[in-house]
Amino acid sequence: MLKKAQLSWIALRDADCQFLASGAEGGSVQPMLINQCMSDKTVERESFLASLLQCEDGDQSCPLPPAN
Image 1: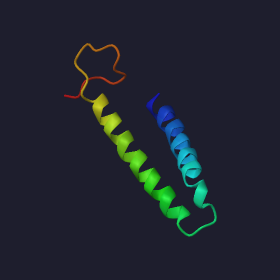
Image 2: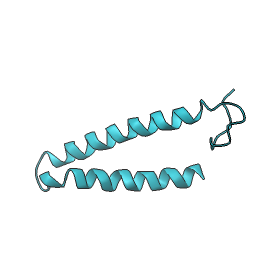
Image 3: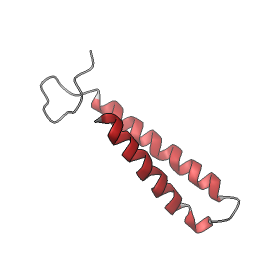
Image 4: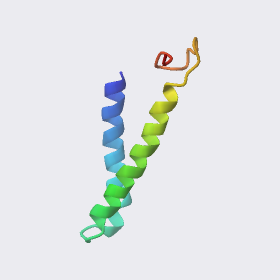
């Protein structure tokens, strides 16, 4: 499940960043805007995934087992 969620998230991240940088389409700054967006969103995702490792034992809303 996690792999499928990650692949879907990557597609969404890429599409979002392409859209957010579309105002600079064709310009030399567009790749920089896309890369910064992708970096920012990846840091956010990393924090989210790390939070899943902090679930309490028995927390049924957590998709991952508690880290030991």
